[in-house]
Length: 486
Image 1: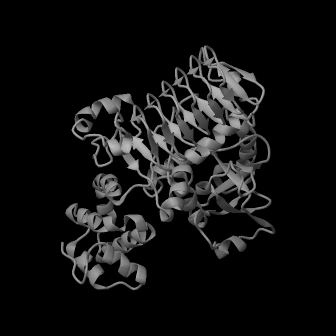
Image 2: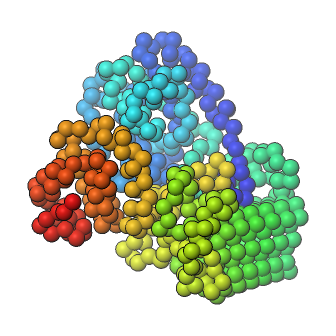
Image 3: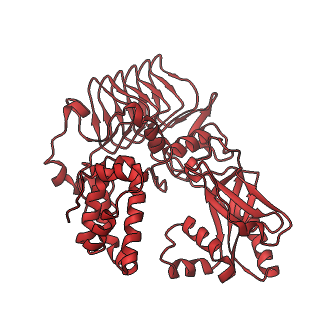
């Protein structure tokens, strides 16, 4: 599942074959309805193939393998278990935190109907929680199947993208290896040599260049002299200049890298041009067709895109990591905004989405770009990624969603108490998102203009006053003193 340089498709039929047999037998002997069997793999906490955003704790019946409780543990210091899991009548039950969720589920036909009938079910996690809460009423059950064999991982963010790509190159997913060419695409094969170095057809290597270990180079790629490459993947039709250093770099297709460039733990997407003597520090991302340089250094965690962060897209599916067609369609918008040479270099093209961090934001960045706060659809290449945004960028992305979903809000927010509950939920959200608190007043204004919330309800909520120091600080961040004007 490497985006960009190679696309790997996993055949999960072997993984799911035995759970299906177990599931069929269970449905014959159990009077209750098992609507889903979730597949997990044994994996100790802290293993590099486990992503923090997918860490879960599961309580289950030891004999029937029925799921009694399912909870994500990301960011939690304390865990609470409902008492009914200890009173459901089983002689034995287990609480496990050594399971990696493979995100493979064997579902009954009822799952589609349940998703259709319940608007609250937006994700699989919503579905699982809803089934477990209403199990006694509806009789639906969820079971799990645990395997200690094979390889399992889900590419959901850049941390897992790095982890799975590294495992493939290091042959931890054997027999799925790069030289096997299981994509069945002509010309995608490569030769494997010692220290896990892979070369595609037509690769040229300059004098004095070293490929240390765990390196994959795509077809018709040219590498200059005196380069040092380690733990990196380079796509097809790329040009690498002289005296270039690549360490844990993911270089996609048709990328041109000039002389004396250094790239550390970063992603460079299709069509990017990196000018001479550019330094990309850790956790940088260059989106499609960006130009950087020359003679500059991008601070750690910098994200650059051809899409301007303040633009509001008409198409909800367009993201800043857009493909060539989307970039072309937004040409009229982007050409009106000049590129900042201080950000992308004197010959650069692109806009900064995430700039350098101070110490207070350093941990947040590590979670966002290589850990918790981003989403990746790796079905073709790195299709969509959500990064930690500034307050203004967050507002620009959130307000169109409020408009889109306003009919749903109006359907559920009708009584006076519903309005107050909604306001309390909004307050709770922004108390957790401290970096975006200044956007709250704009969100409330937008919800009022969309007729989701009433003026009287907002004023009543505000006049009730803050009960905690954080709530008072939240109101202060809105620039609101003792009055709130609508």
